[in-house]
Every structure is written in C-alpha cells, then in structure tokens.
Length: 479
Ligand code: ATP
Ligand code: MN
Image (cartoon, rainbow, N blue to C red):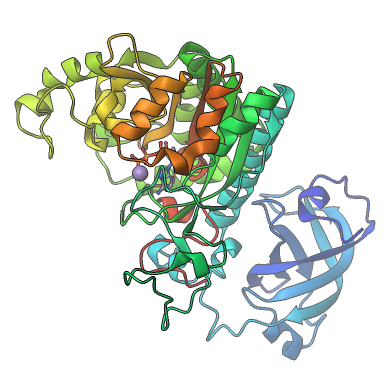
C-alpha cells in the first residue's frame, strides 16, 4: 500500500535493491562529480540523499528540481559514501510531480522566524521545526488514548454545540442560523431565539466536563478529547480561541486519587514521547540550545531532554493555596515590589507570574496547588469542611503555568443547588446535571488538560500558536 516511507528506507540494509522514493526537495547541491538531492516525506526529521551523475539528466529537468518541488525518484539503495547517513539512493530516474518556482516559493533553506512561518501556515509543516512538532503532537495524542485505554477508561464524545451557558459566561462563540440582518424579535423587542435552529441560544463548548460527569455516573471512568472554544480576548502565548482539551472524569475518585492520576498521566505521556520521538526531540533541543547561545550561562534553561526527564523522575510538589499565599507573601519579588500584581492577601486569584514564581523559583519543579477559595473557583467544586475552600487542584508547570485544572465535584444535591443559585444560574438550565446528584449520586473527580500546553511543554515552544497546525486567535482564522 503506497510507497515506502523514507523513515523505513533509512533503516533498510543497502543491497543495491531498487527503491522508489517520493518526497519534497529540501536542498539540491551540485558538485563537480555529483548532484545531491535531499528528499523528505515528513515521515522523519531525516532526509534521504539521492545522488545523480553530472550529465545524467538534462539541464532543463534539473532546473525544475529546486527546494520545495515534489519528486518521484527511482534508483538503487546503496551504502552512502558521505558522512551523515548510512544509505543513499543512486538515481536512475526522476519524475517531477510538482515544481516550486524559487522566485516565489517562500521556504528557502535558511532560518525563517516563527512569526513569518505563522503567516504561511499552509506551508510551515514542510519545515523541520514544524514537522517535528506535528509528529510529537501526534505521538502525544496517541499516548493519551493508549494511557486511558489501558487504565479502563472509555472515550466519551461530548457535544461541540451546547445550550448550557453555565461555565463560560461571556467567553462563548455563538452558534446560530438566524439571519443577522433580519433578526426575529419577541414582543418585548429581544432577539427571539425560539426561531433559531435549536429553538434556544446555542454556543460552542468551553468544556466537555458537565456531560463527562454524566458519563462517569454510568461508565465509572471516562475521558473526552476534543476541540474546545473560548472567545476570551487573551492575546497571550498560552491561549488559543480553539484548542483541544483532555478531560477524564472518574466516579469514586477523591481529590487525592485525582492528583495521583493527573501526575501519573502526564508523566506517562511525556515518557512515551521521550521513547518514541527521539530524533524530533533532539532536533528541537538543538534548536533551543542554538537560540539560547547568546544568553549568559545562568539564564539558560535546562536542555529540553533533561527538562522532560526531570519532570518524569521527580514527584510533583503538592501544597494548598493557603500555603502558597504564605510563600508568595514572604517572597523576594513581593517584598521588592517586582510582581506586576502584588499579592494582597488570602483570597486573590493567582496570576501566572505568581504561579511561575512558585514553580520556577521556589520549588523548581511542577506543583499541584489545592483547596482554593470557593469564590475564585467553579460552582461544581466540592466544598471543604471549613466552607471557605473547595477541593480544587491546579497543576502548574515550568514555563507554562497552569497546564491542568481539576477538582473533586460536589456530589450533594442540596449543596450543589445552593451554589448554582448563589452564582445566579437558573437551575432549570441545568436540570439534567442536577439530576445526577438526585439519582444515585457518587463521589467523583476529574480534570482538564490543555493539550496544546502539553505539546508546548514537550516541544519547548514558547508560543502556543506554534504547536497546533492552524491556530485560531483574535483576528486570525486565515487557514
Ligand atoms: P487560564 O487561567 O490559563 O486561562 P483556565 O483556568 O481558564 O486557564 P480551565 O478552564 O481550568 O483553564 O481549563 C483547563 C485547561 O485547559 C487549562 O489548565 C489549560 O491547560 C487549558 N486552557 C484553558 N484555556 C485555554 C486556552 N484559551 N487555550 C489553550 N488552552 C487553554
Ligand atoms: Mn482561561
């Protein structure tokens, strides 16, 4: 089925056997004795070298073999004479599938800035950096499914279109088929959503959790892994308007179990990448080292592979929000007024500079913060005995900040109903969610991991827009 992949050809023992290689030209180099064409088909970071003799092909044909053109090369697989590869292809025939005019083709064999590459997102998967990221992204997604499958979880497909606005007030993308130039009105003059497609207001989901909980109350352990949409206007390096979220939800798990699962889960999927993406990780590590070459020694970060191994090998630090506030109040940046948002006391929402201080400066490892004040967390989180804090847990990572947000859920019908009313949600809108607490309620917990933040961490990329093929962010949905 289909041609051999370059990844496999590079592993094959050369015995003069005939091979067909199909791929895109990365570089062409002509010397007195030979013409070298480096081909890549995206199956690996490594190119295969194809070699022709001068005069073997017409100048006219060779002129169309340029960076970016697509070729079918036929030849013999032989041991390579040159350094850098063990095999190469001695070309007998070249078919040019598609040319790429060097005057126009924007990807030349030189270093392009990530900002420039974002403007040509239709072509950037052909660069070493992006193909490495996309292969790692694939491996991580595969590892996620494998992990949960082996642990007895079921993959639950929660809806992308939702009518509950419980979670993301103000951050949702509306879904409508109404004619925006001619909106139906009620007698009071408001928009009449009864005439809309679903007969009510509808939006793109900001989280599959609430439906995930319904699944966990039947299948015990489920996870979702799907696209999530947030219209938050955060032009940061850690936010996208469309991102992928992994949300496991488990009956009979308390907060401790939830933390244990979250920690084991991230460690296992990172380990999968370390084992299966060596070439790509090495490439990205060298890229980062190169980038930091000009920084003073003490400002350079750990080499990528060491950073990943460190996270896998060391237990995450676990502490309560209250303990974190005490540390922050006594911290150097707090005393020297270096925080953009000074810590004013218990009850504040931590900003990412606070989270990163705890992770990168104070503990120097991933941190799980628990038991946040109820006022700054969601209504569905289980109240602690003191009535002031909830059984929340956020996992904070170096360079990223929050990578996971989760909690034990409130399983008491009365308490949950009380919280729903308190924050001003109409219980009618959540009748189905509330009924899980009425019929066979159970202690349960879950969390959400932002998949792109995980890919960011594993690849060491600084901007979340560079770890998804076609990023969506304010004023940008070009490709
Ligand atoms: P933040 O405070 O960083 O905006 P959040 O508290 O809104 O995150 P949650 O609602 O708990 O995040 O979502 C769970 C996880 O989803 C987060 O831990 C993060 O990894 C990821 N996430 C949240 N918002 C985004 C976004 N806009 N783009 C990419 N990932 C996101
Ligand atoms: Mn957010």
